[in-house]
Length: 184
Image (cartoon, rainbow, N blue to C red; front, side, top):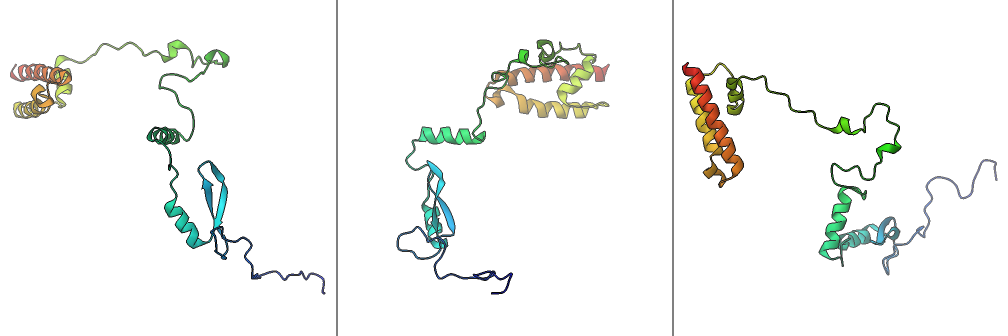
């Protein structure tokens, strides 16, 4: 034997026996495709040939035998990639006293909303915002927009909704302010 030669020779070498047989009973083809044994053992596999892995996959049901509540819990848990969650606004056990905070990011004062600033708008500017219009304004444009908003926000068109009733009142007030400013 010459130096540098290996036995068996490298390259294409076909064996008459596959390295792993298909796990389907009675099949003597190579088991090249893996499939999990059960949802409890997702890292343990059957090894199938292509035809049998297709059959296995078509009948696989991960949720088989589970109650609807269990399925719902698992689906919700998967939404967050199996990570714990907590309600918004809570820091989930975070203790700001244990963190060095030279910029006072976690102090109460930083997280409080600033008080609302008094509006520097004139009544006409506020009315234009309510009506979603811009100056210069014509009487025709104002009337057309008023009709449109009345149809949209009328309480009868919104099933007696209290919010719609309040919007409707604000629209009426804005219309009155703008009409008076146009006629003065």
